[in-house]
Image (tube, rainbow, N blue to C red; front, side):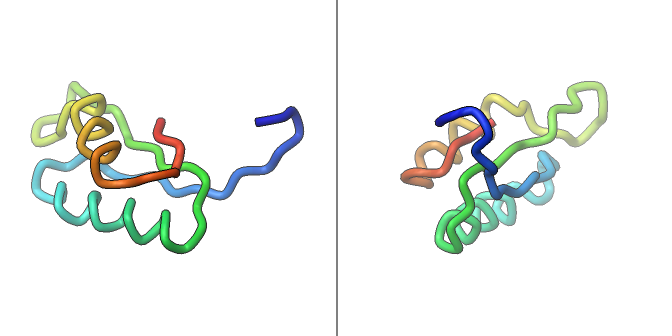
Length: 68
């Protein structure tokens, strides 16, 4: 990546009740050409997944999109 490059991406919630939707959204974003998928990290909120764990799952379900 070079300085000044613009990335197109999506931000996903980390709700444990919507984990399957977050995985599918990451796949669709990648298919549509997104460069970046980010995950919200709110460990103090009940019902939120650990962001790093969700990113690990997304890494196994996507091929080229950057994860953050």
